Amino acid sequence: MRGRDLFRSAKPVLSGIVLLMRIVPKPILIWMWILSDMLPELAGVAFRYCVLRRLAHRCGDNVLVGRNVEIKYWERLSIGSNVSIHKQCYLDAYGELSIDNDVSIAHQSSLVSFQHTWSDESMAIRDNPVVCDRIHIGSDVWIGCGVRVLAGVKVGSRTVIAAGAVVTRSVPPGVIAAGVPAKPVKTIGKEREQRPLAAVIDYKRRD
Image (cartoon, rainbow, N blue to C red):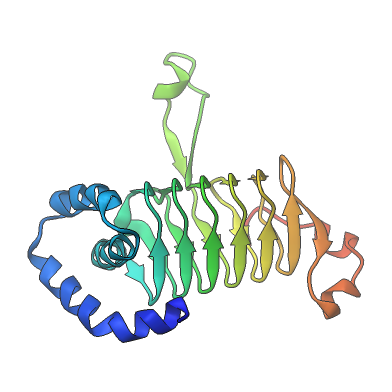
């Protein structure tokens, strides 16, 4: 049985659990999120979905979150449907983080929606103000293992980010992006493959 079919059959029960969680304070829910790593695989996935649905700004259907996933600023996190976030990922939504439908984020990836500044020489760099900038992951995106997505990045739909890439600038739709910093290296799809790669390389940091 596919995950989305299993979710469909379990959705009434999960919705009931989410309703019950409304009476549980946020700090306790976050503590329970951490403890959910000790649950059996399927039970842990179900429980983490319920907590995510309760705490995130928006959360769609059939969202799988693996063990040891850390989330910061839940209330600024939006996630669509049919999304998988695998173990040991780090999501910091301080500057807002939006993930559309049909996205897979492989293990040990980080999405951080703020960056440090260093212009004030009177204080240590770590004490300088941070700058927030929204991250938007489009639909039908596969983010490989160990990827770093930095603040202000928009990843276009139907895009693959190769393992180990560091994404510092926005990525157009329909490409494979790789490297440090990440750049488009190939187009995806029959129609897209008719375009020269140079046509999609000149992309901007933000729309």
